[in-house]
Length: 228
Figure (spheres, rainbow, N blue to C red):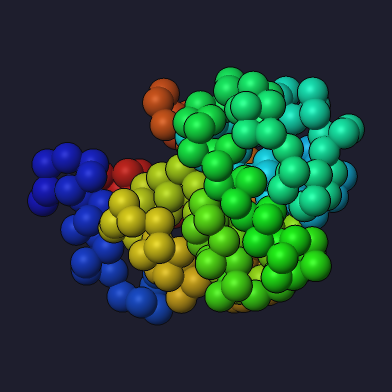
């Protein structure tokens, strides 16, 4: 038997039948729905464009910090036009605490200028169009489409979602795109949006990156680690 937890999880993934994996996934989500019935996005925003800006700022930064930062300028900058016209140095000054502020500011301004020029200041409603915007990858596009329009094309995969997917033996890769693909095969489309936020809440409260609380985890009987 593989010696380490990570090796055992990979062994589990490689030997478990798809039927059993789907069954575990269904049970896991039923439990998550019970424990996290009101899970939702924690970023604070008033307009769809502010949502996009917040999600772009959340890269390598906590939602809590993003909310603290955006509170200082969201009352003034609300539309694509506002951000398309903002001076780069001004925006960088606001968002510096979120990290990587040079590239984030550049992408926000470039993206909002495209929104103004090509989409009348509105956010596009397809994954294909979203992914053409500077600084927008699948996670950002998924979050924006789900929360701005209720359009579900995939599953937002952040660090919490990726970590739990691996620990539960639902995916054996670190690649967010592949993790998303693996989860999309296991869970019904109608659950994709809420699934992400329930996994995030579970990752923040129980299945943390360090010092995970396995003893009180409601998913422990479904987790490969419990069988080692």
